[in-house]
Length: 82
Image (cartoon, rainbow, N blue to C red; front, side, top):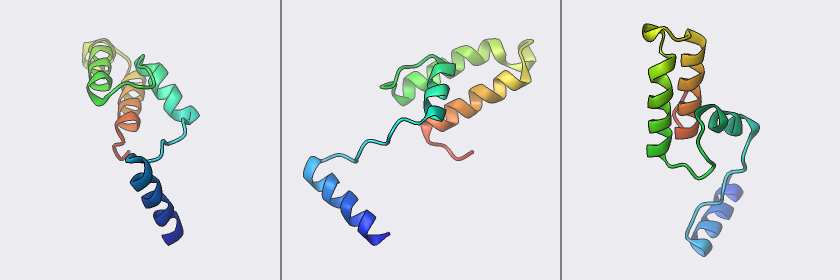
């Protein structure tokens, strides 16, 4: 564990940034569901979620399952705990 942290610190100090996380199939599916690109920032993710939830919310005649999927996709992309 300490070795991994030391490697991360060396990478961050040398490049000034954190190493890029590899794209997972789950993250790609979440981006596709929300219709955002790989470089979408938090504001774009929230805007896409808000737009889609206006149609998908159960209180507005939408599907409960779709609303849950949209919420899960937003949480995954924003790094929130499930």
